Amino acid sequence: MIHLNITGYSVEKLEDPFGLLTGDRFEFFLELEVDEEDELYSDKGIGLKVIFVIEENKTRITNYHFYESGSEKVLDFALEEEEEAQVLSFCQENICE
Image (cartoon, rainbow, N blue to C red; front, side, top):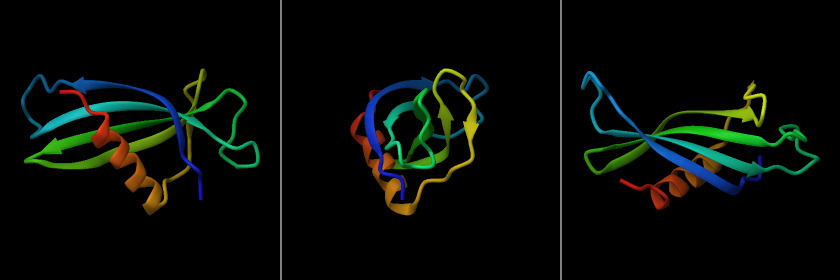
């Protein structure tokens, strides 16, 4: 299990210029502190990009990926169920419309 320690973030509302998508979409970039012993660790730092959706008063994560800071290299790791719930909760608490 990856211990998620979110040390910083940025968020931006995504625009749908054609009006094809329902709800509001936000892109979160989470900065993570990862233990050196974890296989996800990189000395450059690790981030998590999250697409967060608000639709009919319901929220969900539609997509996410880990990346190496600086190089933006996508890393092939997945969140466990509890971690995804933690990220969803973080996004809900830090959304700005």
